[in-house]
Length: 124
Length: 366
Figure 1: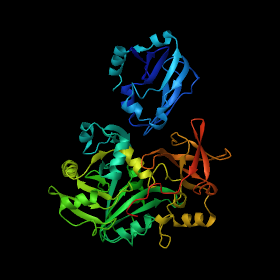
Figure 2: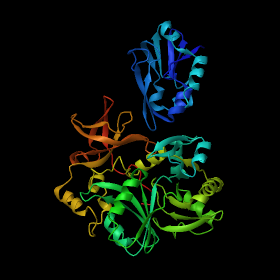
Figure 3: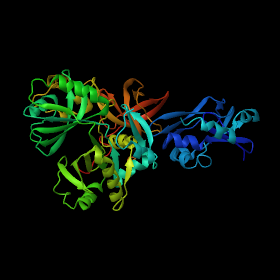
Figure 4: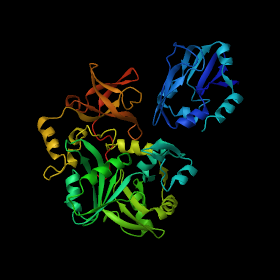
């Protein structure tokens, strides 16, 4: 499964007709214990790079930015009771939402290798 | 940035570091803030709080001086005991909240908040001249730890081979020793759990820190703990944090701290406190919880059920022990009764809330 990343640390991967999205492992580790996720609403139009949700860690609220342009097709309702899934399983059970999008905005994201390279510049 | 003696330990232990009041302090370690919170509630946690200020006050006039500048009854504090109090301005505004250790008849240690150290030091010195005593800032020479949790006193008893549980009153001061390292301990804390706060010479601080972690690990669960869980642990039992529940615009009764004012004695700010009590309060500290999910943060508006803005959040977080999203706020007394329905505006989204009965978590020692 090809996974691509935004500079704001969200990931996206193709799943059937949709793209599944979440927060990167690097970002979940960086924000620490997540206590609440404000999910986008199903059916909402989202724009690549625009805020579409909030990750609340123990100490702060962090905006989530949509990695793709399109429409929210589904959200991970399990996060309402278990926001910590984003910490324990950021790439799988802790997914945030599914977006109906075109391939162009997916291609505009960084590849996994490019993201790894990008992270090297982040830790100062 | 300022560093405590244990700075390299914190970093090697993988702590997330954060600047707090000019200090490079651990926010949480590898376990994460929520688990650290839970370990303190069920077993034991060790905090480095050496960033806090410690002033030594000694001499004939020390008791009179402290009794006037601190809101609580210092005369009534016996040697070997410690107690909470406030430094107030003449107009009753809170300069700081402090913890006073009366080591001997005329020998005190005053523990102050790191964020207020300079301000408190200047304030005390401004009022010191007419008293026969010496004031010394000992903060750079000693380290301060908090060792907190239900297992702390029983395990200390074993480690120090002495009887503590019954003989040691809350707020009592003892000199103890672990691995031949002597330290001063007060049976107090800021978590709502039983435990101690420990003063130790800098030269032996790291050895004592590691000794406590090693020895306790042989008897119970223990973890080093950071400032994040210190905040959630103090929030649940309702302890104030300066800069949030307390500041120079807030008077003690508004922050529910009338009990820390000895109105039978004489202290700086007393007239203002009495005048406010006479007039009646315009605002009062409450704890609320959201009945819809979301995290109320400092600065968010608190609304009445009808939608009128009635106050602002001063502290807000997810409280792990009670499993609720909670906040402290100042609101008019008409809205302060527990059970009152309120609302909080979370970045534009209005969520339902209710005034909670305080404290959210009742300490076992009370």
